[in-house]
Image 1 (cartoon, rainbow, N blue to C red):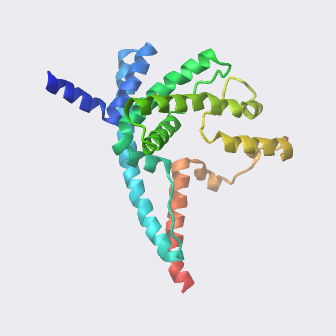
Image 2 (image 1 turned 60 degrees about the vertical axis):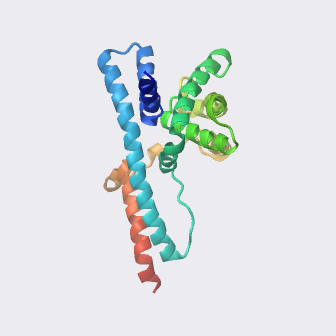
Image 3 (image 1 turned 180 degrees about the vertical axis):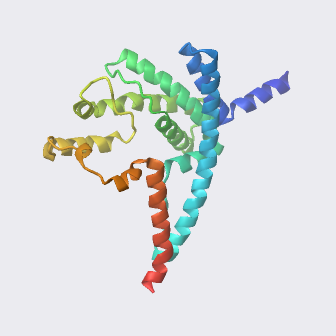
Length: 245
C-alpha cells in the first residue's frame, strides 16, 4: 500500500499529469460527456508535454542564434521567451506551478463572486506563465511547500481580477460591449496605450481599414510570420561578417 501511495504521489507531482487532472475536474464540473472529458484531458496532457518539447527546440535554436549574433555584431545579451523559460523551470517548479494555476482560478472565481470585479480570467497560457513566475520568485524568498502554493494562488488569483478591471474602460470602447475583458498580465502597457490613443488618436481611423497587398497576406498567419522573421534574422546575422568585411 505504501508503494502505491508513493507511486500516486510521484504521478501527481508530474506537471503534465497535474494539469490534466485539473482539466479533468473542470470538464466534470461542466457536466461534459465522457467523450469530451477524455478528449479534453488527453489533449491537455499532450499539449503540456508538447510545450516542453517545443520549448527545448526553441531554446536550442535561440542559443545558436545568440552565438551567431554575438559573433556578427559583437553584442551579447539574453533572448527572453516566456515559453522557453517556463518549460525550463518546469523541471524544478512544475508541481507548484500546476497547484497555483488550479487554486488561483478558485480564488479568481471567489473574488469575482464577492467583489465588484466581475471578471473570470480565461487566458490559460498566461495564467501558467504567471503561476510559474510567482512560484520561482516566492521560492527564492525562502517560501516553500504549502505556504508557497497558498500565497502564490492568492497573488495570481487577485491579479486575475485586477488586471482586466484596470483596462476595462478602454476595452469597452474598442469592443463596444461590457461582456468581454482583456485577460493579460501586461495590462499596464495596454492602459498606457489606451490613454495615449484616447488623448491623441484619431477614432475615425482604424488599422482594420489598411489595405494590405494580397502578396503579403500570408504574414497574417502568426507561425508563418514568426518563421519568416526568424529566418531573416538568422540570414542577416550570418551574412553580416561578409558585409562588414
